[in-house]
Image (tube, rainbow, N blue to C red):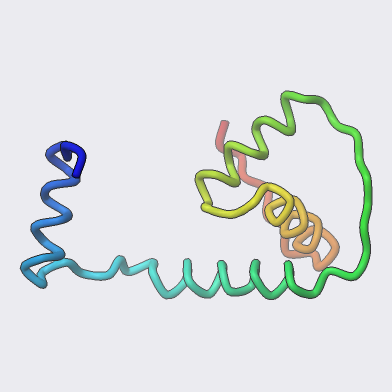
Length: 92
């Protein structure tokens, strides 16, 4: 087993002692990822798109942070846009 940092040791200790608690956002995150999975399984069309490498790299980083493939993230963004539920984030 590799060496754990302090935060990792705390998490492991909490898990082993049974005191680890689910995040308040866990249900929402689980639901969101379920939607991603369902959308991914319902694929029935293919597109090709060209975009700047920088944009693709940023999409890939965001997908990694979400724990999903970047193509799934792109499909989710497009789906939200066409459904009118894409919300602009003014955070820079």
